[in-house]
Length: 303
Image 1 (cartoon, rainbow, N blue to C red):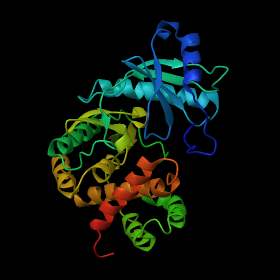
Image 2: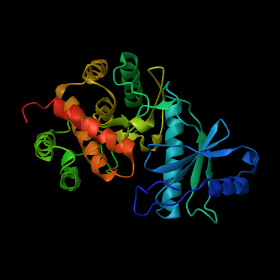
Image 3: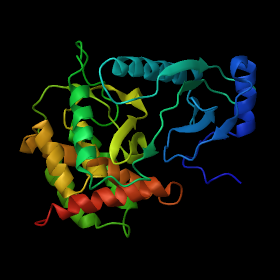
Image 4: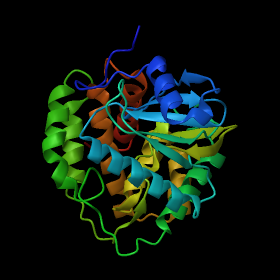
């Protein structure tokens, strides 16, 4: 029995399909066992290949050329990160081709051990907060090399997301305090972007953060690496940390009030989508949305 699809156009990926694709295209791995990985992710189906590799299959099909470009961009981003940070990230191994049973390109990466932060609660860990601040700082220090925000997704101008937020507020009635959250968004969306773009991970959600013994153990889904609003990666503080640990991270990064509040705005934008879109299909993402919204509301006593 397969879990309920998260997306209307979601592709089915089974262990048998993965086995067939690996045997056909990468016979050097034919003797290694293949097993599905329970994941909070919303973009890829993930399968272990032996102990040291993982295959990732996009859950939504665009055209083949677009998916191949995105997989290559993710591999390039991983290579750029690997030379600049201390935290482990998956290293690219190969890009697979479409097959008779699966219509899109797919990828093989190294397996990074650890437990997702959505499974092991590190919200009250000082060491984790400082580790996360260290990672964000190391990513920020990567040379943008003339690159600027590409205009896709979060990381540019907050008002660009007004239509999406209206959709989220409409669909979240009865789930969260929509009137208060509308007032908060109305305030936050007006905050100007005054700092130049820096390199960001772009999606520091609990499912993309690996932990072990209360420390940061790895970062996943690095394909979004790119220049954006310096406040963007502060979403991790709201998704992952309690109030005292957020203060610790903010201190380590030296965030001023404007940057900190814009980080809250990006976290609210992401959380509002998660809380309704994944209500029935991805409990971990739904819970992340609710937890983040509760943290934000707790800091907005006057709204």
